[in-house]
Each structure stands twice: as structure tokens, then as C-alpha cells.
Image (cartoon, rainbow, N blue to C red; front, side, top):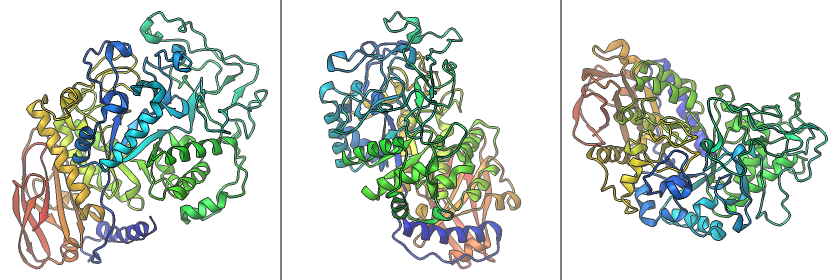
Length: 624
């Protein structure tokens, strides 16, 4: 990490020259052994192996089916790896609330009044020291089945990521398999006060929790009769809700199925713990770990640190942290430095949506990666929908140039609409130029969501979940993914020709990104330069260059779904000098399909390439 940061500092200087002084000469790169790009494949674990196509709204586990850990066979994992994937994020692994009766295994039933959907939210964790019983063939052996999946994933060459949700847990948290000496959350809380630094929860003393008033004709389980769906859930005193609501009867729009964890932040905002010294953001994780040694920290800090280290000991390679910005950054310094001391290569990804907090959570909180949602994702989504301009993309990279490696790129995940859904782009093909840009614009990791590579449209009406998103709350099947599974043959033989071609595109692109040295090194925008200087070049097109000592790439994407574009793309003088290109002609060829080739003509220190792009076409041109 330290070497990578030193190298990124060099790139930052180069970017400053490249963005601000078109005629300046950039320093030459020295060939390095920096790591290549990483690709995360997010899979919703209970949906992956489900071959049941019933998809009845509010269907039970028997009616609609569910996937298991064992469905991730060596063949399935090999196909995921061969797609160009380095890490697999198994979403929904920790034991969360579900409306399925497992009482014969000693697991208490969950109350539909505080469970979203029938399959439950993966972010309402009920037991952090075990896994979702839905996912096991043998429920009593469920943890061993997950350990076997970790081993199979590693044998396939994939690193394993799971979720940890430090901000909140299920209202009915119950640890059944806690390691010796581990107490449940809230077991020793003083419930007579709203706040105590070592309480795990915030309370409304002498108040009783009430379930939300249901609106919009909603009823738990779609109105189906259930012995526990009685409009009541016993919680005395009432706890604050996961999203911060202090109401004893939260609103339906609140995260009413969860309770907020107390990290030693007083209700008035005062922090009852040590803060990091000024300038400590520049220290490495070892110094952060040392800082916390011997210091007293709130009980919740230790509980979640122990949970993370438990999973690291089981072989998990990293975590995706839900709503990390709702937890104080000092806790992350404590937690992540502890993880890194045990596994320096651990992959730590966080959901942080406030750009003003990015640098704190990366530098102080020692996060490896954050979602680049509110800048790149939101901007590129607007371009894909036809009303945004590509002109807005280069300034994002300029704004994030000091942390660009840490800003993970994605176009789909479990929270977002499917590209092919009418609420997003309505056509999976519109994701192709966006995917090229997202995967090649920076040195950061790329993430895709399972079945994105097939054009899944999320159109099912599952119950609690809404169409356009693949539901995380219901038992459903995922049609495009099921066609690729082909009754667990994992060979894609039921896919349509269009789906096969789309998966081939993703496979070509992702495999190129994880092998390319240029994509792990330098970047410069040439889009804004061409907007000023190139006839026929407009705000539906985007171009930039990437390079290393032995690879020079020119990347051009057409986001227009109706029009061809032809123009003489210009490569600015500072790039030509940096690449040490003399006057003359150089062959450039697309690396994805190898069908498009052209000539880079260098004259008077300016390069030009005649480019013709079909609708939604991208080319990654490599100088031969």
C-alpha cells in the first residue's frame, strides 16, 4: 500500500500537468511492478443457484425456491473467474431475519412486523457468528458449508468478500453460536438511560416500541395470515432505529427492522472517545493500530472488531461495509487497522455517499475503497439515459485525482436499478459504452452485479421489493441468470444470442482490464481538448488516454444509441511528447474485438486518428 501511494503521488503530479497545461511535457513513466486492476463480482447468494421460475409475489421458500452455498460448484466458480473476476462478494451471508421456520434447529422465529419481505433484509443481521440458514443444505452444518465455499472460491482463484453492517443490527438480535466469552449486543446495557458510552444501543427509557403505521395499502407478507403478524413486537424500552430515528414508533420509511448501534457518540453529538491527532491521516495502518493500544474504547467497537477478526480467521479476504459514514471515522481507524494487522491484503470496501467525507474515511478510517456513486455513477447514468453530457465526466476524475485509486466504479449493485430496466436505461446495450468508461477510466477496482453481464432487467414483482431492482427481500428467481445457469450446468446454453454476445463483451472487457499495465498507471483526459478542437466531436462521445511504460491506450466511447460519429480525434502535444512519438504514422488497433484499426498520424507534435464509431460502440486502441 505504501509503495502504491508513492506511485500514485507521481501520477497526481502528471495529471496536474496533463489537465492544466496542454502543451507541457509530462515526465516519462518508469516500468513498474504495480498491481493490476481488480474486479469484484457481487452475487446475491440466495438467488444465485435458484432454478425455480415460479416467481409468485410474496412466495414462500418452498413456492419460489432458494439457492444454496453448494450451488457455487467448481464449474460455476471457474466461469465467474474466467469472466475476468478477482474478488467475489457473497451478499447476504451473515444470519439475518427470515420468515422461515427453523425452530427445530434452535433458531427462534422472526416477526413479520419487523422483517422486510419474506426472505428478509441481509442488512438486518440477527447473528454475526453464523450464516443464513436458508443457504445451507444441512442447517445444522451451515457454517461448515460456508467454510467449504470459501475454500472452493480460493481454489478457483477468487478472493472472498462478505458484508459487515456496523451501523445497525436486527431488532431481535440473538447470537446462538457466540465464541466463548462473547456477549450479545446489549446484554449488559443500562436500559434506564438514553445513553451510556458502553451501552450498545440508544434507548427511550420507559417507552414501549410500536411497529410502524402501515401506509400505501402495505401489510407484512402481503396480508397473509401469520401467527406473529399481529401488529406488535415486544421491545421495552424502545431502542432508536437504524437510520437514526429516535421515535418509539418509527415511520414505515425508517429502517424499522433494525436498531442503531451506539459507538460512544452522545445524543448531542459529543464524542466520548479519543480522537486521532492532527496529521494522523498521513500515518499507515500500523501506526493507527499502535495508537489504539492501551486506550479505552466503547464496548461496540470491540464487539465489531472481534466479529471482523472472526471472519478473517475463517478465511474471508475482506468486507463490504454498509452505510459506513453513519459510524464515526475513529472507529474505522480502530477496526480496519486491526484487520490489516492480521491480513495486510484484506479488501475493505465502504458505502460512503458524502464526497466531503471521502478523504477522511480513506485516510483516517483506513478504507481501501469507497463507492464512486454520487459523482461518477450518477453522472454516467444520466448520460446513459440520454440527457446527461459526457463533458461532466472529466471534472470528476480531476476532483478525485488524489484518491482515484480508492473510488470503486460500478453500474449496478443490489441497491440500484438494473441497466435494462425502464427506470434506468431500458436497454442493456446502453451499458456497453458506460461499462468501458467505468472499467478503464481509473486505477480503481471495477464491480459488476451478477446477471448484469446478461442484461437482466429486474422486472419481477416479488412482493416487498420493487421491479427494476432484483429484490433483496424476497424469494425469487433471476430469469436471465437462470438461463445462463442452464439447470446448474453453468454453460449459458439457454441464453439468447443477444445475451451471449453481451456476456462475451463483458468477458473481453474485464479480462483485458485485469491484465493491462496501462490501466494500473497513468491517465489523462483528451475529451475536453477535442471538444474545443475537433469537428464532429460532441458531448455524446468521451475519450481519454491511459499508459504505462510498455502500453499506450486511446479509449473512445459513443453513448449515442442512434447516431454514428466520424471525426479526426486529436492527441495533444504533451501526450505525444510523453509517449516519445516522432513524426510519422503508427498503427492503432482495438484490443476488444480487433476489428477496428486506424493510423495515428503525428505531425508537428500533434496526433490525429480517424475514428468512426457506431451507436453505443467503444474502442480501446492500442498503439502497436
